[in-house]
Length: 412
Ligand SMILES: Cc1cc2nc3c(=O)[nH]c(=O)nc-3n(C[C@H](O)[C@H](O)[C@H](O)COP(=O)(O)OP(=O)(O)OC[C@H]3O[C@@H](n4cnc5c(N)ncnc54)[C@H](O)[C@@H]3O)c2cc1C
Image (cartoon, rainbow, N blue to C red; front, side, top):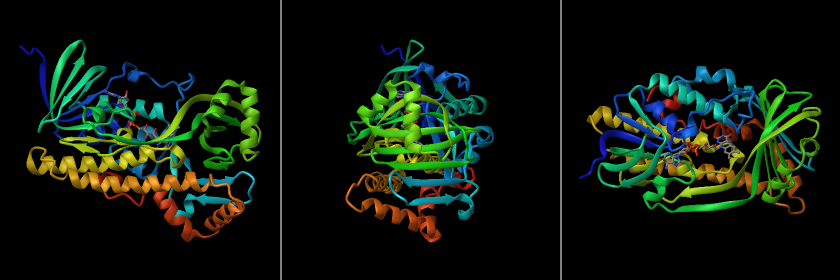
């Protein structure tokens, strides 16, 4: 006899990371029955600024800010989210510089820098306080799944085997998604020869609200305003060099990073290296099987160069939430007849973002004679002509892709 506990849900979200929690928040005000499954016990950790709690900086685009405003969490994020009001783009060894100012685009900011663990913590607090209708299973083990009309998930939670029947399953379980594997969805994987090292610089001459993107001979250095005289950095280099730069002393690394950045922010006074990340594109070949759909890193893990991964995922999930809510309100159940339209619209959006990232990674890695001067001219051209900047910036800030209501400051 099967002694498993049986539960029914409209939507089961697998993965309580940034994307899974954001979707849960977007659906929380509606009468859908939702479960959120997370495998890691330490998800309950509390961010503490004085500890080494810094994991990685995230730049939230204007479209993402609007999303968090719509789901009512922006007021809690705002004190920690540092606006980027200008961006300075340059290339090592070449004279061209492009400067972008948010006010010229009639935007309050290009984006907002926030620490990823802090954002996760704030989303979790908000979910616990507001979303009484959501059942949170954490930690879960032994996820199994049978794709049927109503998908059957089997999990072990608190030592008990539970069977969850779901009208719709959302796989928001990251780059190595179990949902994706259970659905036999293959991935297209492109490993980059570089890795990323992230951390914090304390500088002598801070330029408030200014971000720097510096294309180097062997990588990219992004320096982002974080707090007062502290700037977060993301430094990409060939993998073996990143291993080396993680192993040297703070003093040696500080001198190295000073040379890469120059004296744009004065003398660097201290440096904290927090973590390294491999760089890859991992793209699911399909996003949907039966009533299960992939979201976030499970659908598309992207190179961080354009700060697009999470921002793109929020634009995906804003549309997904809108479709789910409308379907439920109209039909009193989830028919999911719109799922193919949703997937094809969002896969097209993903293709554009991947093309943009390819453009950034390729155009600054070509080392032909004269190519540096051409890039300098391009940067100079972009710097001088607002009409060239506007479409680039609208794209980077996610504002060319805001059909869903949640991205226009409205509820879904
Ligand atoms: C260095 C770096 C900088 C970046 N900067 C930016 C940026 O500036 N802007 C931007 O938009 N994006 C950025 N990104 C991308 C961004 O970090 C990701 O897009 C985002 O974290 C994806 O979140 P996720 O919830 O999809 O995946 P994850 O954060 O991986 O979360 C997945 C969750 O699922 C859980 N899980 C896994 N397996 C299971 C299972 N079987 N059952 C239950 N739960 C499971 C995991 O424990 C985890 O909590 C950056 C990435 C890197 C590496």
